Length: 66
Length: 243
Image (cartoon, rainbow over all chains, first blue to last red; front, side, top):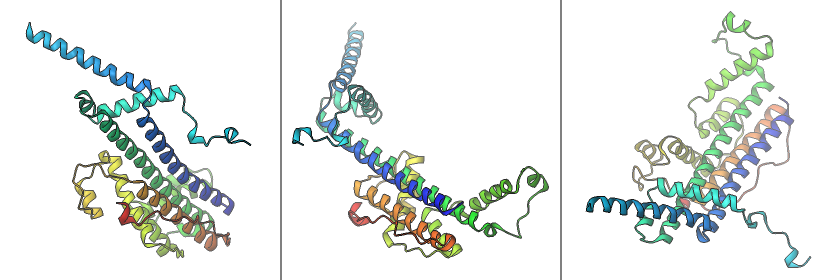
């Protein structure tokens, strides 16, 4: 291995560390924005989940009363 | 160029609806696996739950960062020892170790045999050693002149222990972690709280250690004295403050 090759490995290492940090930071920014301005797709999923639970509860209540 | 024509920074670009949809499903999965849907169903405080969800997800991002940083550092230290061995093959010579005829004949060339022996040598030198131990190994075994700052190795040692619980215990603290790190104020079973300050310091420590190793090996084994390529970073805070 010559020095140029080793130097390239060093720069690749530095770039990998920076990339990892940037992904973490950008991810945090996107999450912050996302949880503060929930898109319709998310509220739809939540409300859909709530509907299913509501139906299940009503179904169970019906079975108990009958 | 008028202000309206200024290009937006990359992270300010609005992400598309498909991405939002995928993120929605992923976050919903996190809500379910973290048992947070119960709280939403009870309609206690949706905003509070979402805030909690944001914190959980941010911790996951920081965990990814720690895992990758330690992995890249281990990998670069490995590459550094390979660089030394290739430059000075005599380093792996050992009169105590023997090669079987079978192994010697399984290699078509001397280079191939050397690569095999070198891999064995590196494994024997680094097996079970932490990143900090490997740095000390370079100083003691190969006489590298490394300037190891106090916080540098401490940050990396703690990060390595955190990496261990992330990989083996879902990021939750166990008795082994408490014993090895001396952390006493966190309960066994709780998720180790990572903050941006600590994660940043770990990245800086990794970059600084890599830079020290690279500079010292360049000078000692390659007779190259590069300009100072160690990134000059400023720590955001001391380790203790970041906890």
